Amino acid sequence: MLIIQLIIIQVLTFAALVFVLYKIMYSASFVETKRLQQLSRENAEKARELAAKMEEAEKKYRDKVEAAEKEANRLRAEAKEQSDKIKEEALNKAKQEADRMIKQALNTKEKIREEIEAGLQEKCVEQSLALIQKILTSKNMLILRTAVLQDALDEIGMIEASKLNVNTDKGELIIAVEITKAEKEQIASTLSAKTGRNITLEETADASIIAGVIIKLGGLIIDGSLRGKLNEACEALRK
Image (tube, rainbow, N blue to C red; front, side, top):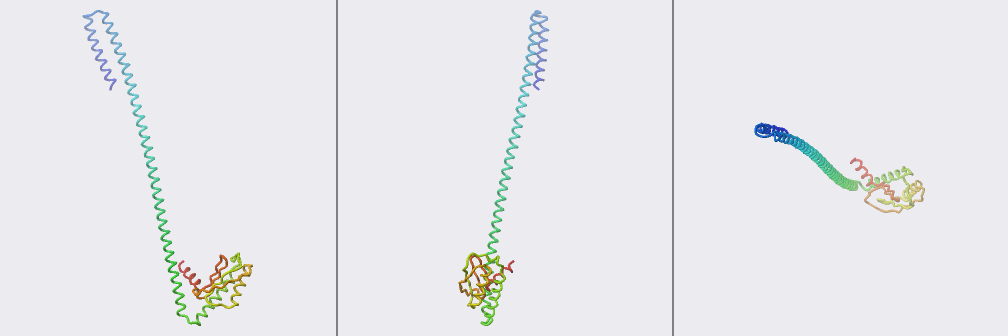
C-alpha cells in the first residue's frame, strides 16, 4: 500500500515537473530546464531509496511480530504443560490419599470385625463351658475329664520331635483337677524323649480349663484342655 502511494506521489510529481518544464520551455532558459530535470531525477532516486527503506522496515516489523507470536505461543504451551503436570500430580496425590484413607478404613473395619468375632468366640466358649458344668453330673464330668486328658496324652505322644525344639529343662503343667502320678510321669517322660532333655514340670491349678492339661515349655505351648478344644472348634467354624 505504501509503495503504491509513493508511486502515485512520484507520478504526480513527475506530472508537475512536466508541466513546469512545459512552462519553462516558453519562459526560462535551457540551463534552468536541465537543472530541473536533474532535480527530478534526484527526487525520483530519493523516492526509490525511501521506498526501499520503508519496505525493509516493514519486513523487519513483520519478522519481529512473527517471532513475538511464536515466543508467546511457546510460553503458552509451556505454561499449559506445567499446569497440566501440576494438575496431574495433584490428582495423583489426591488419589493416593483417598486410597490410603480407604485402606485405613478397611483395616479398621477388619480389625473391629476381628475384635467382635474374638469377643463372640470367647463368649461362646464361656457359655459352652458353663453349660457343660451345669448339665453334666459329677460322674459324667469325671468321664469327660478322663477322656479329655487321655486325648491330650495321645496328642503329646504324636507330636513330632522336630517341633519340640526347646532350650529349657523346666516347664509348667496346668491342670483343671488333680491327675495321677503315673499320668504326670507319662507326660514328663514323653517330653523328655522327644526333646532329648530331662524335663521336669511344675504343676499349676486352673479350674477354668475344665478338663485336660496345658503344657508350657519355654516358648512352646501345648493346649490339651477342654477350653482349648472349644476355641479350636469355634475358630474352625469362623473360617
